[in-house]
Length: 327
Image 1 (cartoon, rainbow, N blue to C red):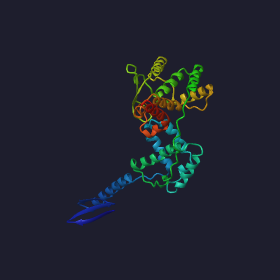
Image 2: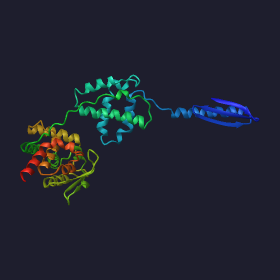
Image 3: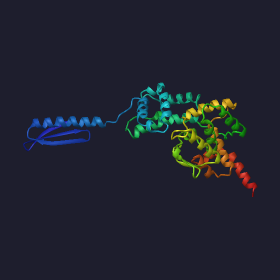
Image 4: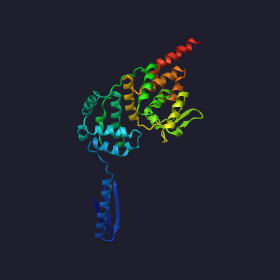
């Protein structure tokens, strides 16, 4: 509020709003009042502009996150699908002051009836990250107690499912009747290098070093580049992909297109229990069987910790047994 007082034949005006204070002296009371009214309006406008925003519900947070944060991610397409599905949930529009952990607990338990615990934890992690961004970067003010629910319990990883050489041969033979000419070379490259679908689709001509027989993978799932030495069979597959492709990308398919094509392929081969990702598991198992050490295998596969490689303990045990028998 403004106060005006006369001191030494002049009029001193003072405006104080909150912790902010302004003052000035004038010849007439009218000038002091006019100045005070103007300054008061300015300070009130500044206070209103800097007042922290409180979102109405999680939907408001997720909509801004979807617009500002998601597009910059490598997984933007998949994350957009996940967020749009979550936005259809009724608890998304409950006022934050009324939203309880029980609402999210019910959602968790219901989702776990149809998806794996690890999948739920990844999807729920998007909500947690969005709320953290809203608080730390956007300076939005709200109580996030509703996020304090237990994560879904993830069972310990199962042992790696191997693919017999007979089944590998059946898959490769099935590609002879496949309409997509890329699939046979994609299968061979996955078995020889352990590359994921997304990594295969990201392969570029400039990533291939034929002179040294190495793929310099720059676009990996975990963001860490790695060099993958190529076997003779892998080099042959890469050369055929280069011949077939008139584009910089070697594989003219999306990850989902590879998945769908592989589903048809395995059905044709009569082995419906095999997933495309099992080719990566088989490749890593074979690396151990070749006698490579865990650090050497990790440098090829891209695993960041030894614990991630422990799923291949059977293949590692076989290698250790061979080494001990040779002594």
